[in-house]
Image (cartoon, rainbow, N blue to C red; front, side):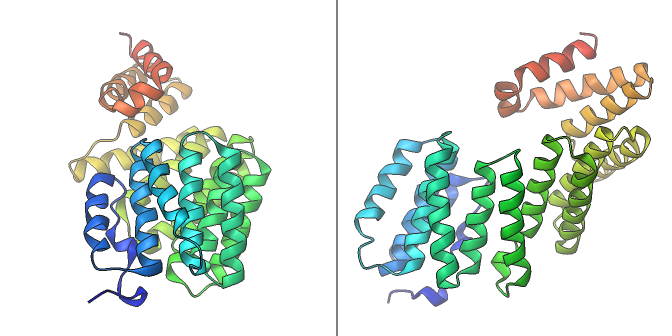
Length: 289
Protein backbone atom coordinates (compact mmCIF):
# COMPACT_ATOMS: atom_id res chain seq x y z
CA UNK A 1 0.00 0.00 0.00
CA UNK A 2 1.32 3.42 -0.99
CA UNK A 3 1.85 6.07 1.65
CA UNK A 4 -0.13 9.31 1.41
CA UNK A 5 1.27 12.81 1.87
CA UNK A 6 -0.16 12.82 5.40
CA UNK A 7 1.79 9.93 6.87
CA UNK A 8 5.38 10.60 5.87
CA UNK A 9 7.63 13.35 7.21
CA UNK A 10 10.28 14.12 4.62
CA UNK A 11 12.40 16.03 7.13
CA UNK A 12 12.63 12.93 9.33
CA UNK A 13 14.64 11.20 6.60
CA UNK A 14 17.36 13.85 6.66
CA UNK A 15 20.73 13.71 8.34
CA UNK A 16 22.42 16.69 6.72
CA UNK A 17 25.88 15.77 7.98
CA UNK A 18 25.57 12.41 6.17
CA UNK A 19 24.00 12.96 2.72
CA UNK A 20 24.82 9.42 1.55
CA UNK A 21 22.83 7.82 4.38
CA UNK A 22 20.01 10.29 3.77
CA UNK A 23 19.98 9.29 0.10
CA UNK A 24 19.63 5.62 1.05
CA UNK A 25 16.65 6.37 3.28
CA UNK A 26 14.97 8.47 0.59
CA UNK A 27 15.50 5.78 -2.03
CA UNK A 28 13.95 3.18 0.27
CA UNK A 29 10.96 5.51 0.74
CA UNK A 30 10.40 5.76 -3.03
CA UNK A 31 8.95 2.23 -3.05
CA UNK A 32 6.24 3.34 -0.61
CA UNK A 33 5.20 6.58 -2.33
CA UNK A 34 3.53 7.80 -5.47
CA UNK A 35 2.38 10.97 -7.18
CA UNK A 36 3.43 14.33 -5.83
CA UNK A 37 5.10 12.93 -2.73
CA UNK A 38 7.32 10.72 -4.88
CA UNK A 39 8.43 13.81 -6.80
CA UNK A 40 9.18 15.60 -3.53
CA UNK A 41 11.36 12.70 -2.39
CA UNK A 42 13.23 12.74 -5.71
CA UNK A 43 14.02 16.43 -5.17
CA UNK A 44 15.53 15.52 -1.80
CA UNK A 45 17.64 12.79 -3.40
CA UNK A 46 18.89 15.49 -5.74
CA UNK A 47 19.76 17.60 -2.73
CA UNK A 48 21.88 14.82 -1.25
CA UNK A 49 24.06 14.98 -4.36
CA UNK A 50 24.24 18.78 -4.23
CA UNK A 51 25.43 18.62 -0.62
CA UNK A 52 28.24 16.32 -1.75
CA UNK A 53 29.27 18.74 -4.51
CA UNK A 54 28.04 16.35 -7.21
CA UNK A 55 26.09 19.02 -9.04
CA UNK A 56 25.77 17.33 -12.41
CA UNK A 57 24.12 14.31 -10.83
CA UNK A 58 21.85 16.56 -8.76
CA UNK A 59 20.73 18.37 -11.92
CA UNK A 60 20.09 15.06 -13.71
CA UNK A 61 17.70 13.97 -10.97
CA UNK A 62 16.00 17.35 -10.96
CA UNK A 63 15.68 17.20 -14.77
CA UNK A 64 13.76 13.97 -14.32
CA UNK A 65 11.50 15.63 -11.74
CA UNK A 66 10.91 18.63 -14.01
CA UNK A 67 9.64 16.36 -16.80
CA UNK A 68 7.01 14.94 -14.42
CA UNK A 69 5.74 18.22 -12.96
CA UNK A 70 2.98 18.79 -15.51
CA UNK A 71 -0.30 18.77 -13.59
CA UNK A 72 1.45 18.30 -10.26
CA UNK A 73 0.23 20.15 -7.20
CA UNK A 74 2.04 23.22 -5.89
CA UNK A 75 4.11 21.50 -3.21
CA UNK A 76 6.22 19.27 -5.54
CA UNK A 77 6.76 22.29 -7.81
CA UNK A 78 8.01 24.45 -4.93
CA UNK A 79 10.24 21.63 -3.66
CA UNK A 80 11.69 21.36 -7.16
CA UNK A 81 12.33 25.13 -7.36
CA UNK A 82 14.01 25.13 -3.96
CA UNK A 83 16.30 22.19 -4.70
CA UNK A 84 17.20 23.32 -8.21
CA UNK A 85 17.96 26.72 -6.70
CA UNK A 86 20.07 25.20 -3.92
CA UNK A 87 22.04 23.22 -6.48
CA UNK A 88 22.79 26.37 -8.47
CA UNK A 89 23.62 28.31 -5.31
CA UNK A 90 26.01 25.65 -3.99
CA UNK A 91 27.78 25.71 -7.34
CA UNK A 92 28.22 29.50 -7.19
CA UNK A 93 25.43 30.36 -9.66
CA UNK A 94 23.64 32.78 -7.35
CA UNK A 95 21.55 34.68 -9.90
CA UNK A 96 20.04 31.49 -11.33
CA UNK A 97 19.41 30.30 -7.79
CA UNK A 98 17.78 33.57 -6.71
CA UNK A 99 15.33 33.51 -9.61
CA UNK A 100 14.13 30.04 -8.59
CA UNK A 101 13.95 30.91 -4.89
CA UNK A 102 11.80 33.97 -5.66
CA UNK A 103 9.46 31.77 -7.71
CA UNK A 104 9.29 29.35 -4.79
CA UNK A 105 8.56 32.21 -2.36
CA UNK A 106 5.69 33.49 -4.50
CA UNK A 107 4.19 30.05 -5.18
CA UNK A 108 4.43 28.90 -1.56
CA UNK A 109 3.00 32.16 -0.23
CA UNK A 110 0.05 32.01 -2.60
CA UNK A 111 -0.63 28.42 -1.53
CA UNK A 112 -0.28 29.13 2.21
CA UNK A 113 2.69 26.78 2.54
CA UNK A 114 4.47 28.65 5.31
CA UNK A 115 7.26 26.12 5.79
CA UNK A 116 8.39 26.27 2.16
CA UNK A 117 7.81 30.02 1.88
CA UNK A 118 10.04 30.68 4.89
CA UNK A 119 12.65 28.32 3.48
CA UNK A 120 12.55 30.25 0.20
CA UNK A 121 12.99 33.63 1.94
CA UNK A 122 15.87 32.15 3.93
CA UNK A 123 17.55 30.99 0.70
CA UNK A 124 16.95 34.27 -1.16
CA UNK A 125 18.71 36.03 1.71
CA UNK A 126 21.66 33.64 1.38
CA UNK A 127 22.08 34.63 -2.28
CA UNK A 128 22.36 38.25 -1.11
CA UNK A 129 24.75 37.35 1.73
CA UNK A 130 26.49 40.30 3.40
CA UNK A 131 24.18 42.95 1.95
CA UNK A 132 21.13 44.96 3.07
CA UNK A 133 18.98 42.83 0.72
CA UNK A 134 19.94 39.75 2.75
CA UNK A 135 18.74 41.41 5.96
CA UNK A 136 15.50 42.49 4.27
CA UNK A 137 14.69 39.01 2.98
CA UNK A 138 15.47 37.40 6.31
CA UNK A 139 13.13 39.91 7.93
CA UNK A 140 10.37 38.88 5.50
CA UNK A 141 10.95 35.24 6.36
CA UNK A 142 11.06 35.98 10.08
CA UNK A 143 7.80 37.94 9.94
CA UNK A 144 6.04 35.02 8.27
CA UNK A 145 7.61 32.40 10.57
CA UNK A 146 6.68 34.29 13.72
CA UNK A 147 3.01 34.59 12.82
CA UNK A 148 2.79 31.06 11.38
CA UNK A 149 1.41 28.04 13.21
CA UNK A 150 3.66 25.73 11.17
CA UNK A 151 6.43 24.27 13.40
CA UNK A 152 8.77 23.83 10.42
CA UNK A 153 8.41 27.49 9.52
CA UNK A 154 9.14 28.43 13.12
CA UNK A 155 12.08 26.07 13.11
CA UNK A 156 13.98 28.37 10.76
CA UNK A 157 13.74 31.40 13.07
CA UNK A 158 17.12 30.97 14.82
CA UNK A 159 18.94 30.27 11.53
CA UNK A 160 17.52 33.42 9.94
CA UNK A 161 18.41 35.49 13.00
CA UNK A 162 21.94 34.10 12.90
CA UNK A 163 22.31 34.75 9.17
CA UNK A 164 21.01 38.31 9.51
CA UNK A 165 23.43 38.91 12.36
CA UNK A 166 26.36 37.79 10.21
CA UNK A 167 25.14 39.94 7.32
CA UNK A 168 25.09 42.97 9.61
CA UNK A 169 28.47 41.98 11.01
CA UNK A 170 29.90 41.82 7.48
CA UNK A 171 28.63 45.36 6.90
CA UNK A 172 30.34 46.58 10.08
CA UNK A 173 27.02 47.14 11.89
CA UNK A 174 28.23 45.38 15.02
CA UNK A 175 25.76 46.77 17.57
CA UNK A 176 22.78 45.70 15.46
CA UNK A 177 24.43 42.35 14.79
CA UNK A 178 24.90 41.70 18.51
CA UNK A 179 21.19 42.14 19.17
CA UNK A 180 20.36 39.46 16.59
CA UNK A 181 23.13 37.12 17.73
CA UNK A 182 21.67 37.29 21.24
CA UNK A 183 18.15 36.68 19.90
CA UNK A 184 19.41 33.65 17.98
CA UNK A 185 21.11 32.35 21.12
CA UNK A 186 17.87 32.67 23.09
CA UNK A 187 15.99 30.80 20.35
CA UNK A 188 18.50 27.94 20.34
CA UNK A 189 18.47 27.75 24.14
CA UNK A 190 14.67 27.46 24.06
CA UNK A 191 15.05 24.52 21.66
CA UNK A 192 17.70 22.82 23.82
CA UNK A 193 20.04 21.85 20.97
CA UNK A 194 23.48 21.82 22.60
CA UNK A 195 25.67 22.13 19.49
CA UNK A 196 23.63 25.06 18.19
CA UNK A 197 23.67 26.74 21.60
CA UNK A 198 27.46 26.48 21.68
CA UNK A 199 27.77 27.99 18.20
CA UNK A 200 25.37 30.78 19.19
CA UNK A 201 27.45 31.59 22.27
CA UNK A 202 30.61 31.60 20.15
CA UNK A 203 28.95 34.00 17.69
CA UNK A 204 27.91 36.42 20.46
CA UNK A 205 31.49 36.42 21.75
CA UNK A 206 32.90 36.90 18.25
CA UNK A 207 30.72 39.96 17.80
CA UNK A 208 31.81 41.30 21.19
CA UNK A 209 35.40 41.09 19.95
CA UNK A 210 34.43 43.22 16.95
CA UNK A 211 32.99 45.71 19.45
CA UNK A 212 36.39 45.77 21.24
CA UNK A 213 34.86 44.12 24.31
CA UNK A 214 37.73 41.68 24.63
CA UNK A 215 37.32 40.77 28.31
CA UNK A 216 33.62 39.91 27.89
CA UNK A 217 34.34 37.92 24.72
CA UNK A 218 37.17 36.03 26.42
CA UNK A 219 34.99 35.00 29.37
CA UNK A 220 32.41 33.45 27.01
CA UNK A 221 35.02 31.61 24.93
CA UNK A 222 36.80 30.28 28.02
CA UNK A 223 33.49 29.02 29.37
CA UNK A 224 32.92 27.25 26.04
CA UNK A 225 36.37 25.67 26.29
CA UNK A 226 35.46 24.25 29.71
CA UNK A 227 32.08 23.10 28.42
CA UNK A 228 33.68 21.24 25.52
CA UNK A 229 36.23 19.68 27.88
CA UNK A 230 33.42 18.44 30.13
CA UNK A 231 31.72 16.82 27.14
CA UNK A 232 34.98 15.32 25.89
CA UNK A 233 35.08 17.51 22.78
CA UNK A 234 37.35 20.24 21.44
CA UNK A 235 36.68 23.20 19.16
CA UNK A 236 39.50 24.83 17.22
CA UNK A 237 37.38 27.91 16.56
CA UNK A 238 37.05 28.45 20.31
CA UNK A 239 40.84 28.14 20.70
CA UNK A 240 41.33 30.64 17.89
CA UNK A 241 39.02 33.20 19.49
CA UNK A 242 40.61 32.77 22.92
CA UNK A 243 43.98 33.41 21.28
CA UNK A 244 42.72 36.49 19.43
CA UNK A 245 41.24 38.04 22.57
CA UNK A 246 44.32 37.26 24.68
CA UNK A 247 46.53 38.87 22.05
CA UNK A 248 44.36 41.99 21.93
CA UNK A 249 44.56 42.18 25.72
CA UNK A 250 48.36 42.10 25.49
CA UNK A 251 48.66 38.59 26.96
CA UNK A 252 50.87 37.35 24.14
CA UNK A 253 52.48 34.40 25.90
CA UNK A 254 49.09 32.88 26.70
CA UNK A 255 47.81 33.75 23.23
CA UNK A 256 50.68 31.85 21.60
CA UNK A 257 49.65 28.66 23.38
CA UNK A 258 46.11 28.96 22.08
CA UNK A 259 47.20 29.83 18.54
CA UNK A 260 49.15 26.56 18.63
CA UNK A 261 46.09 24.65 19.87
CA UNK A 262 43.90 26.28 17.19
CA UNK A 263 46.43 25.47 14.48
CA UNK A 264 46.57 21.80 15.48
CA UNK A 265 42.81 21.39 15.85
CA UNK A 266 41.71 23.30 12.76
CA UNK A 267 44.46 21.67 10.72
CA UNK A 268 42.62 18.37 11.17
CA UNK A 269 39.58 19.82 9.38
CA UNK A 270 39.88 19.06 5.65
CA UNK A 271 37.40 21.79 4.72
CA UNK A 272 39.26 24.40 6.78
CA UNK A 273 42.65 23.36 5.41
CA UNK A 274 41.33 23.56 1.85
CA UNK A 275 39.25 26.74 2.11
CA UNK A 276 41.06 28.70 4.83
CA UNK A 277 44.67 27.95 3.96
CA UNK A 278 45.86 31.51 4.60
CA UNK A 279 44.11 31.59 7.95
CA UNK A 280 45.72 28.29 8.88
CA UNK A 281 49.11 29.64 7.82
CA UNK A 282 48.55 32.73 10.00
CA UNK A 283 47.70 30.52 12.99
CA UNK A 284 50.92 28.56 12.45
CA UNK A 285 53.01 31.73 12.31
CA UNK A 286 51.34 33.24 15.37
CA UNK A 287 51.96 30.00 17.21
CA UNK A 288 55.67 30.56 16.59
CA UNK A 289 56.16 27.61 14.30
